[in-house]
Amino acid sequence: MFAVGEVVVYPGHGVCKIEKIVERIISGANKRFFLLRALGAEMCILIPEDKIENAGLRHVVDVQTAERILAILKEPDVDKVENNHNKQSWNRRFREYMERIKTGNTVQIAQVLRTLSSVGLTKCLSFGEKRILNTSKALLAQEIAVAKRCSTDRALNEIEAALNGNQSL
Image (cartoon, rainbow, N blue to C red; front, side):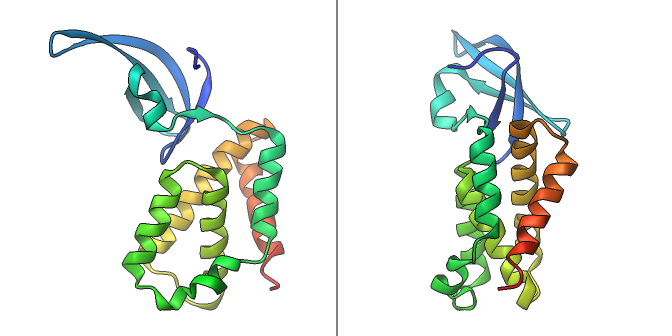
């Protein structure tokens, strides 16, 4: 399972460190919680031990998966073509992108980032789409940095390079 001191990923919030396990009395029953501290943010999260699986908490991806994420960002954006980005209303796209990010699945997050980056080349993104683009980029950069044991800035540079490699399409 998970241990104190371990670095994990909490969907939608990114890379966190398990600081400690705390006990609280809730409705007369003693419950155990994992106390997570989000890396790069002044935020702590309490997750009930019995809800860890439902919360989507998972281990950080390995180096090979981090490289696969970067490869996905270089691929042509099939989503943009298949979904005809312009045919959906902005709020439907926003909800769809947020649902994909909240899964915590790095492939899904990379696909959202790739799509928004590609769309941003041909039209102006809405405020919400820009926010999702930045969120997905930050979440991926954090996880790639931990997986590859490098700085977040270096991971961001690798992400930008991968996205720039697909802009010629």
